[in-house]
Image (tube, rainbow, N blue to C red; front, side, top):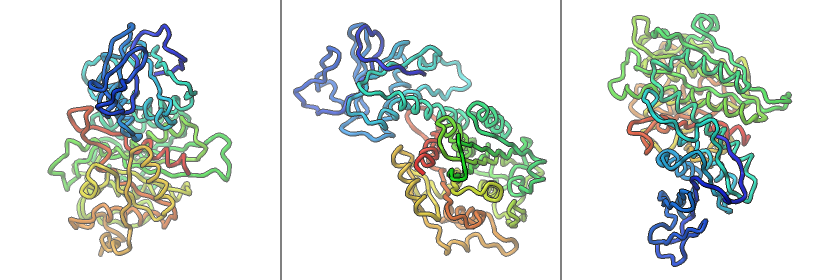
Length: 476
């Protein structure tokens, strides 16, 4: 999708999208636009409503926004129009921007329209969305210049579309090697460096916890390291480290899952969020250095699989007692964090993972769990999330929870064995491998990375984290 700015609708024929803020149901003043008068009895701008009028060789779609609307709702509103009114969108479409629209509202609107092109039917024959035609241009009618904003909005949506694809594609397609190939190709396209450690290179490097998880699969694990360097970077340039969980499928290992395994292709959604953030950060050319690590592996069941009660050795040199092989995500993150800290020494670190059902039990599907030892980072992450509708809420990392990961035989154990505070004990485990880094945060996105909404009949990806991580870095 490309965009162009128009000053009026003179000579225009096609579809016109007209956002309307709510008046009230008994308003005597009709909504008027382009010679069309719409009485409040049929439409008055109520949120989640729209009204279609054919006139002057144009299809006018009046889109209700309600009296006020937040970023996420606005994005969803226009994704809905794009996805569900596809038959009304032809080769020429104009979007009318209300004078009171802010930069953020324009961004949400344009992103939503492009996100509406996403089709979950990857292996079905479906018609191509009109917005995806090479020669399509969205005409924007506005008195203000929003070219920079619309370009940014399209970049945000393109990164999110990539991650919707990665998370929703099946695990026989998205293997660890598929992800490392994606990173290499995207790095070349957008301008970030990529290094991948396969099984032997990871073994030589000492990534014992990571390899313990991946060794039971015929799909070779891939430890993906990415570096983005902004133009004119120097010693004062801020340096952010990201780590994402890249489990392409999680059987639970020998502690095999007994329910919900069909959705475990989404267990790489944290890693996917990091991949998407790297694309977006590079595309926006943010003035911050970013090092990102995504350990990619499949937690499978095989004669080579690691066992409950095994003691394994991590990259940091700490021994880990395996209580549950289904607590595998924290193992690969531990090596990812340790490798990042030892070799790259970033000022700020954020890890992101679909880590625990406990986070879902606490927050449902409304927000992610946030753990951090730094209140400034906590505030920036939450503010960034609130601004775009990717919300976070902080849970404690008190030392009283440390006993949950204490082991008799090893330095630490990977699972408390208790039916409560699972998200907290997992975060305490990760904290153990941060070398007391002063600016680290952990995001448990198990409840928000994959779920139900109006855009498909089955659970599917949300691309949560792509925009959040980018906005956080943007706001540092």
